Image (cartoon, rainbow, N blue to C red; front, side, top):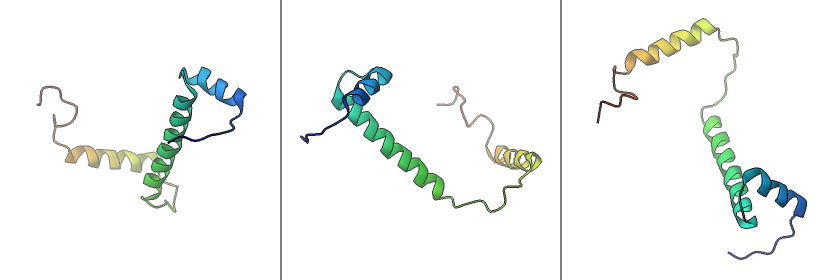
Length: 83
C-alpha cells in the first residue's frame, strides 16, 4: 500500500540507528509490529481478569508451582531425548 507520510526526519533516523534497519519502510513496519504485539500482550493479560488481593505470600506461590510441577510428567517437557 502506498502512502505519503510527513515523519520527523530526526526521529526516523534515530530509529534506524537504534534498530539497525536500513530503510524507512522497515523501521515503520517494525514499529507497527511492536504496537500490534504490545496490544496483543495487553489483551492476553487482560483476558485473565484481575487480582483483587495482592497479598499472596511467596509460600503460596511456591505451593502453586509445586502443584503445577506435580501434574507434568517427568521428561515430557524440554527433554531432547523424546522425539
